[in-house]
Image 1 (cartoon, helix red, strand yellow):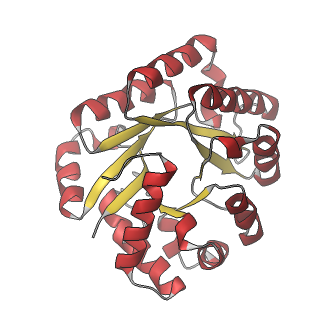
Image 2 (image 1 turned 45 degrees about the horizontal axis):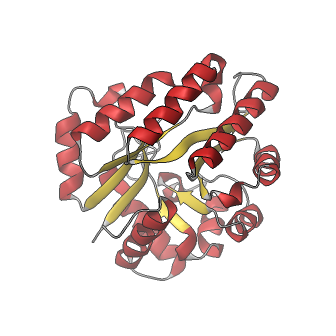
Image 3 (image 1 turned 90 degrees about the vertical axis):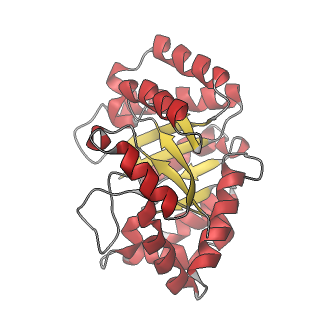
Amino acid sequence: MRIFDTHAHYDDASYDEDREEVIEAIRAAGVKHFVNISADIPSLKGTLGILEKYPESYGTLGIHPSEVRDLNEEVMEEIAEETRNYERIVAIGEIGLDYWDEGPDKEIQAFWFRRQLDLARELDKPVVIHSRDAVQDTYDILAEKHAEDMGGVIHCFSASAEMAKLYVKKGFFIGIGGVVTFKNAKTLKEVAECVPLENIVLETDCPYLAPVPFRGKRNHSGNLTFVAEKIAEIKGVTAEEVCETTYENALRLYRLKQK
C-alpha cells in the first residue's frame, strides 16, 4: 500500500528531538513520499533543509496568510529563485486567507495572496491554498486570478460540499486529513462522500490535526491509514483503493512522473 502525504510540516520544532525516528517510522508505515509545506519565512529554509536530507520528500515555498506582515518583494524574489533552483519544489504554498484570528488586515492578506498567485503563474507551479473562515473571498480571488490555469489543492478543506463541487469543476483537488475522523465533522464527511475519489488527496498538516484515536497528539504521516479507512468507509471502497488512488492523484496534483 502506497501513501503520499501531500501536506506536512516536518521542519516544525516539535520534531527536532526525534525527526529521524519519525521519518523512519512513516517509511515503515508505507509512506512513499511527503511534501513539506512552507508557511513563514524561517520555514522557507527549513523546507529546503528537509529536501536535502530526505530523498522521498518534496517541498513548497510560500507564506501563510497569518504570516504575511513580514513579507516583502525581497522574500518573494528568494521564493522565486529557490523554486527555480530546486527541482523538488513542486508548488507555491501555503497561501490564501485566514480570518479566524486577529491576523493581518484582510486587505494585506488579499494583496499578498494575489501576489503569490501571480508568482505561481510566473513559475508555472500549482498552488496550495489555505482558507479559514474566508470561503467566499478565497473563491473569488482564485476566480479573479484564473487560478484554475495553475491548478492546486484546497488544503484542509472546511467549506461546504457545494463549494467543493465548484472547486472540483475548476480542476482543484480537495485535501482531506484527520478532521474527517472527528465525530463532529459532518460537513467534511459530506464532502468526502460527494467529491469523486479521483479529486481527493490525503494530507496530515502534521504536527497538527491528528486523527482519531490520536486526536490532540503530535501527528505524522503514518496516521494517514486512519484517514484512508474513514474515507473508505464513507465511499464504500477499500482503504487500499483510497491510498492507491490518492497516491496517483498526488502525482497529478504536483505534476510528478510515476514514482
